[in-house]
Image (cartoon, rainbow, N blue to C red; front, top):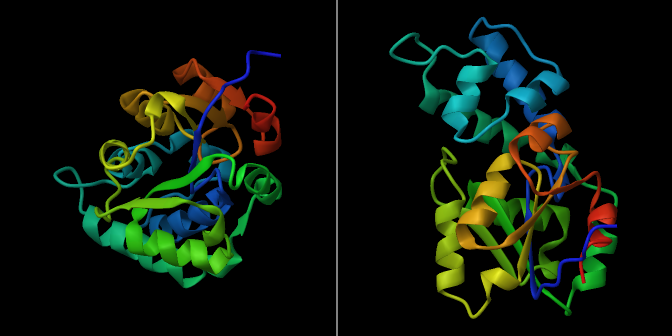
Length: 219
């Protein structure tokens, strides 16, 4: 086993790390692609195309955005947010999440970080009934999800928490980038919005398959 990571704070990405929603995102994406007359994608294709910023991901999956085409990014992004919220009750947390949170609640500072709008993130966490586990819940104000790095930096600048004593658990290369920017360690869980191949080819981080496996490397 690789060396364990010591930490005082654990940051968990929301979409794809806390909740199992890649399939749900893919379904809404396919609605949008069909509406615009484009070919739909499989879950594996979606997980291969997904990236940040969202504008680039939309181009990868087949939308033709201005000036080349007429697919309007702002309209598509707003539609996605509305549809995502409409049936969010279908989304569940990963089965090993609660055991993980219960183990560290009161022992580490637990933080939820998302590229979702703050109000939406709080709404969704309350729907899932997990708000009591987190010491901090952090979303962004930009509906188009350009980056999480800014809010992460702002968070550490306003708290006593030390990023060098923080482990960031995420499911995308963007989570790896955010962790690097703030100076935190990172573990990537390869069951969310990007495939294991994407993670392995784009990151030198420790990559695991579940939170249960990630827990083996945390002390």
